[in-house]
Length: 388
Image (cartoon, rainbow, N blue to C red; front, side, top):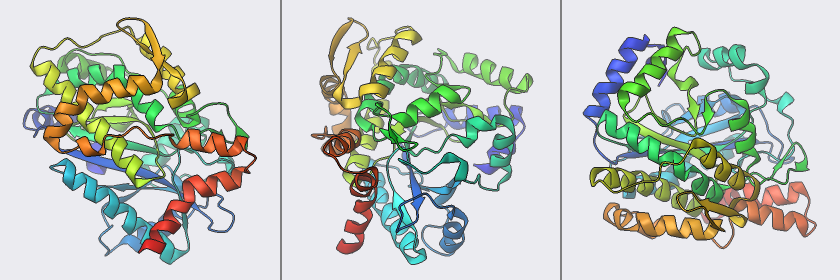
């Protein structure tokens, strides 16, 4: 992605237009972010560069990247042509990362936030991109010690991609509610199910729920305006929770917290993937899709941040309030026919409890934050190593 970041805006936008118009529908890629931990204390540890160097010459080289702080690592499936390929790659990348980290004596954590490590002790990785963001954002970027799961879905046609993006905005709260895994940060129970989302989307500029653009031309006008006014210097400074990507011909869904369990990561990625494809199909067939005011989407997003899968969401077209679980069940039912065509239907799942619910329940039973974090965010790696 680095080369695209440095392209002049005119060239970047020209390439993006052409790439979308030539894109293949419903390719996908998944990115997972993990915390790097001291294996004894389970505190965050700044060792990304060691993992990056150790990955050279392995199958993980090119799929392991830095993500802001030196106590974080991201692994990527790379572009996949089918859900079956992506599903297998998710397991493969986790296995490769666990093996690499284990050789170096580095632990891995997989929830949206770390429960106690201070942000002041995390070092920004030394790359031109992150140095620029450090200078641009200062406290905002220092404070963002968070870990997410992102899904890229290939969409053919520039106008169609923008319209899929516009429609997906409405579904961000359901995806977040399902994915919540970050109730603890700064050594406190925040009372939120996704402290990660509150920290990230309420602090960063051009973040959270974006506007609806209606067409590529309108989206392009806004991007050009940001470049021309010096508001951005790189296209990655558009941090929305869903965005048409300017380096790849994909719509990227960025709302989800990181997932401890592989099965839950697969289920979340499968739902995001099927949702994007089902939305494109609805637009192609002229099926009406809800287009509520952004303030109503934000109302649902707050409900997801605060109560997650345990709360309620509003059916925005009707104003009907129902449990978040029921809302997600309705969404799964809506996407299911397309998910079946894509081979993703068997991974669509609504767990008995998501990560945030499990963590909160254990904490309320009297478990320490360290105990909760080990059980939920770290133990999966030990199970994997034992299995191997």
